[in-house]
Image (cartoon, rainbow, N blue to C red; front, side, top):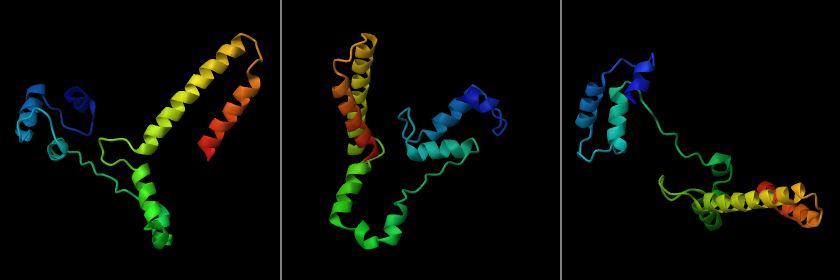
Length: 137
């Protein structure tokens, strides 16, 4: 990290021992890792300031606040957004499974293409249509 910072024209040059001193000074709880507050202090120490973009709920919340606060929308929001920054949402997990299945289909279809057989062409065309509708729908 120190090497990368020293290569940047925007930060002052810092020796490794100095960075170790700064890290030790900023690691308030002595855990050897930095939590969010401690990381923010490091960023200020190296003259960078990071900010978090607020979660933006799109124009639906502004234009149709009644619709946005309905129970089904609350369920949808919990399904789409992760419960915490360290977890994935249900939608992310579902899409991972879908993409893995699609990858398997691509490998199988490629195998049959290399074998120059049209035995399963109709089935693969159907499966491709289903995946296409999942991605678009």
